[in-house]
Length: 449
Image 1 (cartoon, one colour):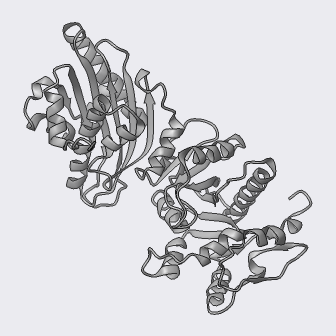
Image 2: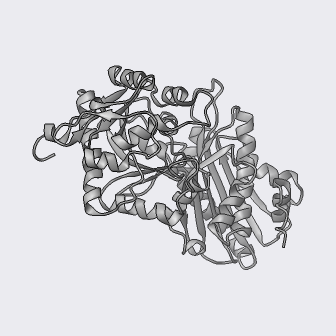
Image 3: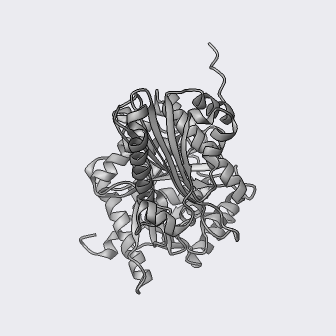
């Protein structure tokens, strides 16, 4: 049976306007009143819109929602949601509560400024009832806007808002149908990198699963998973920080491999501390996974498999960033959205070999373009040594670059690794120019390394 045709934004807004059991308020700050505008122009808005407000002025906003929180923040969004919902129920609960599913839509957005120098992003929230008089449900999103003009961003916010309200009432059968509905027609214009849900409608929905789903389904470039405390958008944890990224597959969750992973990241953080050697902020470190396969031919790992690896890393006290793309240069692009401080990758030699072996068929400049994008002004790679046994076991069977090495007490480091010309000249250059930094073998670090 053919799938039913998807409704466009106009049809969704009209469908809700004609549903006399749905009634709510709109509070929008920072990108016009583009969400409520759809309901006002399609006809029948009196069936849906109880109130629309846009408290642009800071003093007005503080008077309505309280002072103290940043204007584009989860705290401000929560204050808006609580205030608008309370007012809606106080004014209309006795009159319409028995036959109406109420909702409050709110957003607070930093759209592109006139000079185009800011990072356009925002918080979007919806509180709604599934049945009249039922307990409310909340969904909170953090979004990044990717359009190149303020006007286009406003348009995209309007579509997203209509999608969110419609999906909450019509497409809650599964996370796939819900988020597919929310992203419809703005998939490449708005990135959703954080979600939080509460209420009886979401009893079976787990936050870590939802965050991983956003990345694996292509709705987000990355999501952050803390070992303690609550998740947050990547921007909140990366903003203006010195960062160490430890990319890998982390398929082995036994204690021996876990200890190696912990030692690798801890050593890199200590190395960056020595580099900073001043009043700069304490560096933070993350284990990094990709939602894609190791090669273009390899299928992406199932969501359950990704979550198992994430949970294992979190259980050992590590913080995790899940990236959509597998290439290190894509991770560079994402992290450099939010910080210009030092960014350091720490990789084992097997991953380093793969960096040079990859064909980069998706880039016009192939390897040279990949390296140029990877090694931004603030980015370097720490290469962590490996034992000869482990390196041989992980060396790609299809390698064609003639790798050779000199071992020391059974270990290989990046500066004892060589490849045949002409690629060998490029490898030697990255070492000599300190884009690639060879870390010492554990024997040189001391008996407790």
